[in-house]
Picture (cartoon, rainbow, N blue to C red):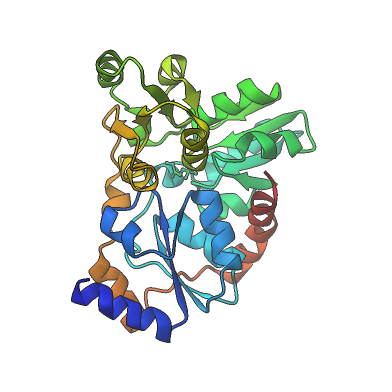
Length: 299
Ligand code: 13P
């Protein structure tokens, strides 16, 4: 154990802190976390774990969601500069324009969005429950954003008419399909799992299109011994840790620089200073609460 990890352990006890990490986080952050999970699991854990402080190791929208769901806890986000280009590609005027064009449609936004966009929506969703949330919306037409690929995937599963914002996750959307095909040839027996933020051409060759939490369940329930993983490379570390008797290979060169910004030294510094705290304008947080709570309760 390093001095940094020892100091984090000491402060985590004194601050009654829970360290939550997304499965895309670097190996050293996953190793020191109290809980590692997908976006939906992290938001639920932030509200339900027995703690006073949450250290959210992920990107900013994850810390914001935790702060809305757990207003009585201090939510630390060790590197506030760790953002999400997908979340920031849809501003409120872009979403409002889509809503004005389709006044009869409820709005569902992906959790990878700004807190202001969530405040404008009926519900938000993650990749784990997007189909269930859109199905639950009390309208036949739904405005959806900001991820065009997830939107198209959900539309194909629900039969509802979706009006989809034209945004995307740069690392997933630019997945290298020639690498996918090459590794398919190298490991012909492997199951190929891809994230719904990947382009439809990747889903077409995949064995399953799944969010990160569902990828873990798929592997657990599968009799296959090798898997090709078409999502952010941190997920490969997570799967190798959970299933040391299986083999995993990343495909498509999907790497998110923002997910790699937090180091153990940043976690320690945030616990020492009890900063940076994720603070949300109270009126915006209040407006977003129903949407975020619906996400956490469905699916
Ligand atoms: P999950 O909801 O599958 O964890 O995905 C989060 C994410 O940010 C994908 O880019």
